[in-house]
Structure formats: structure tokens, C-alpha cells
Figure: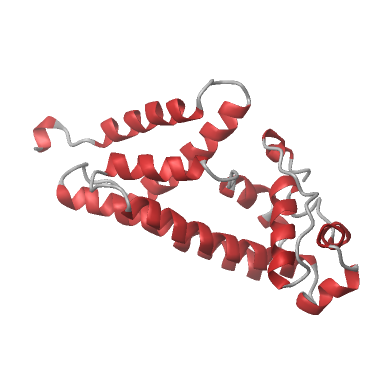
Length: 210
């Protein structure tokens, strides 16, 4: 896997990071985001951090996969917390909550969660695949699922599977990012607003259900 889906976003990994545990995670996160798990080597991580490769094994004795898992776990937790804050900061309308979440998403380096699951996960051990998939779903999807469930109970939207809607929203975010960078739209925020409008209007209760 060459991680070519990431070429629509260029991220600099030349900055030196502190050589401690968090600095190693910072450097590795930049590299994994840009090129993917299989293309990155521990030699590159050590070079960016400014340490010798054997020093990495002090923190990650099992090697690159252990480092990758640590990076993803930290990232999932951070993103889940920030996404939840973005949603809670919005008014009670689901549409406004999703707009807040989308703005937060586009103000940070692209996540490419679904692409990562497709390209990187197959290279991991079964144990790590299961743990990362469960964590990404639980931490990142949870605030979206809860927002959809609240909107359903209040009658704002019709009864739907909240997990399907949350997953569709994540797919929409990533798809909009890729489409915009491929030249299919001039303004990623306008594309997202239009897409959300279609989604929300499609979820509104039918007149006969009111």
C-alpha cells in the first residue's frame, strides 16, 4: 500500500521534535498521516526526532506497529474529545451541531479515518486491528451518535439508525475534503453546507409522521 490517498494533503515532517515520548509520537503522527503505516520506517522517525534508531526501542520495544498503535490511540482520544466539545458548543439543533463539527474538522489536518482503516489496518496484527477499530468507533462516533439520538427523541428528525447517520457524516467529511483538493469544488465549506442541507432535509420527519 503506497498511501497515495494522502497525496491530496501535503504535511511538513521536517520540523525537529523533542526526543521524549510525546515528541516521538508527534513526529510519528506527522509521518503516518502523510505516508501511511507501511511506507514509514523507524529510521525516518528517529531522524525527524533527532535520535538514534535504537533509542526508539526504549519506548517501543515491539517496534513500528507498537508505535503506530500508540499514535493512533492518542490521536483518537484527542479527536474524540475535541469533536465532543465542538458538538456541545453548538445550539440544540442537529444541523447546527453537525455544522460546528464540520468546521472543527476542516480547521485541522485531515483525519482520513476511513482511508486509514482501509489502507493501514490490514497490515496490523488482528489484536491491534480490533482494538483500534473499537476505539475509533467508540471515541469518535460516540458524540455523533448521541447527537443523532437526541435529535430523534426531540422529533427534530425521523427515526433512523444513529450509527449509520454518524458513519455517513464521517464519510461525507472525508469525501468532501478529497473532492475539494481534487478540484471538484472551489470552497470546501460551501460544499459541506450544501451536503449537510441535503442530509438534514432528508432526515426531517415526513408530513404524515408529524
